[in-house]
Amino acid sequence: MKTASHTGFDFLKSAFGKGAVVFAFFAVALVAYAVTYPPQPNATTGVEGMPVGFTSAAYNGDNNGYGGASALCAAAYSNSHVCSAEEIVNGYENNAPLVETFSGIGWINANTSESLTLPTNDCGGWNVSANTHFGAVWNFNADLAGLQQCNTTRSFVCCR
Image (cartoon, rainbow, N blue to C red; front, top):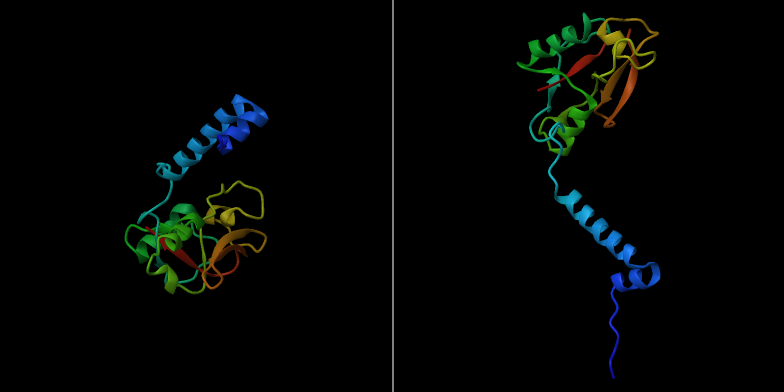
């Protein structure tokens, strides 16, 4: 007696036609490609963009622009700049030894335009210290980002 052997592809073919089998084959191939394909060239991975520490002093939101804020980090840690949330998450994902030891809350760049409407405009591009403007902060105690009024003083989180 001959027994029938059916595969998932046989079921698709009988239920939906030959096109379903071709679609399923390409879907499986696409998933396999996506799993093995390397990260995009502009992705922040590895040792690039890792948090290295905080500025020793605390500052409000008025720091002579993005360049002035990054200069505060460069003075504290050579070749560093103000971190973005992406860089901090990269630090966690790649087990940066310092990230796990950080505590407190520090200013970070949300990488938004200083002309963006309130409330999330990096304190007007780090040019405003008013309580009507907001800047992004990273809370290392809770492992999340948030907003802070720009008249508040905080250290900057520095990356390189």
